[in-house]
Image (cartoon, rainbow, N blue to C red; front, side):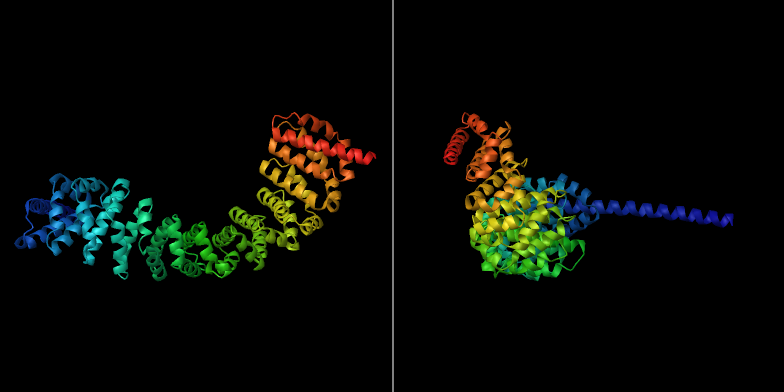
Length: 552
């Protein structure tokens, strides 16, 4: 057994040695072949009779790159063969295509980009984008894309050389050549961040082509590339409108419909990218109106489905869509008529306790935007379900974000509607006390919103809310704000304005006198801020006049 084992071991050693020698021999032969090919490329002429040898050398370089990219790249750089490629790219069609293919492979290596640039190859490659040979276009596109990647100066030169026009033309001429379309999409993705590129693209038919490509895309990677390009283009208002006019909203809505039932990670990435694109398109006023289409547009028509979706991302998109549509007053009135408010309330109900904060804020922002036009605010301000939910959330101290936004929305309804019916509806819903609390908030914006809303409500119908003011100790709270040295001038100004309305009630005026508000107002007549001083003087005059009336 031991002899047999020893023989086997000796045989194994011999085999390994033989394999090592064979590898060394092959490596040496490969190196010799590569050096021969480099030598020929460096000094070859590219004449017709030399074409076969030239193609053989170029194929040899391709094979060497496949076997050992870094070593071959290093030898290519050292041999100074790259300048000769300018000649071969413009030689016979076969050699030109093969030379472009070799360059595209060389440019995969980060270290070879600069040698390719220094060899002056980019200006030689650019005109080749006007070729009608699809294989040439494929390799030239790859070579240019790889050489110029992440090089802002070179990319600007490409745009100046009208490469954008060529890339779009290629995609329009060969829409079914998937590898070629992909290369051009990647090139556009790299260039589209430039403002000059966006401007150039706005003068082409890129919008309609990308819509077409997105509709037919059935592979995740292609969808992702198209959405990335679209997202970049949507930063430009002209392109936003062109995309909307080309029907991008229909293509994106179809895509979301396909993806919404999937749980695959790659599909979720596409779903988010498509959702982000919709929001970007809605940021432009003209494109937003195009997408709304008086409530008949596919995006608005899809909002209800998104708000009720199991996907948080779609819920967020639906809420953000409404918030953006609501930047236009007539859109607000139309959406309120179409009943979108209750859908937002149902969504918020899901997220108040332990839901997504982004969805909460988006839905509340949408409701606040909807309440800005007077007609919409008047209708919303008398909606029992809306007011009931808002008052409930105003009490939700464990959820400060929702609580604060609910208070702000109550104030907004009063400010924008300026309606006696809304004042009564908010009073009936027990909402006034929350606005009084909001007036003493630590956030100045919220304080001012509450003070203005309360002043408006007091001017409209003080009698129906007087009891709530007394119960919430509004006069005393306002007095504390005026006495506090840290209270800003704007808050003091609005506080005094509210007091002027409150003095119209004998009961509330008496509370002010008992709390010695008059002394504080007299001090404020000397306030460093002129507006506060004038407001304080006016309040004193009103207080003194009413005091004289009551004395009579």
